Length: 202
Image (cartoon, rainbow, N blue to C red):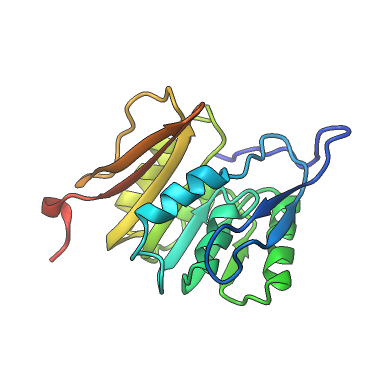
C-alpha cells in the first residue's frame, strides 16, 4: 500500500536546523525543510540512543527508515558508521539530506526517495542497525517490523531502534526478538530491540 506524504510545508512555516551531538561532526548544525509532521529526534533522545548503541555503530551498515530530517543517520555517520541508507518518501526531505551529505563531504550515505514498505519489498540485504521512526499514529510499525524480520533485512546481531507515540499498544517484534532498552520522553516512547539468545543465528 502506498503511503502518501505531504510534499509542501505548512503556510508560513520556517525551515529548522538539527545539531549533531557527537562524533566527527559534533556541534555542526544542518538545515531541514518545514514539512508537516517532520519532527527530528530530540538531542536528549539521540544522546540516550547512541549511548545504548555504543559499540554497535563504528563500522556498522545502517538503515534509516522514514529518515525525515536525517538526524539519526547523520548522527550515526558522525560516530563512525560505515554506511547509511536513508529511506524517505518526501522529495524535499530527500534533497535536504543529500545537501547535508554534501556539506559534510560524506560519501557514506545513500538517499532513496521511496516509500519504506516498497523499499523493504525489494531483495533484502542485512543491516547491523535499523532506525524505524514512522509518523505517529500511522499504523505502519507492525507491518514494517514483520517485513524487516521475515525478509532478511536484519543481520544476526542487529539492533532495531523504534520510536513511536508513548501510548502505542504492545508491538509485535520479529520472531526471536525482545526489547533490550525502553524509555519515554514526553509523548515519545523509544525502544531498542535485539535478538534473544535463542533467536541468534549460529
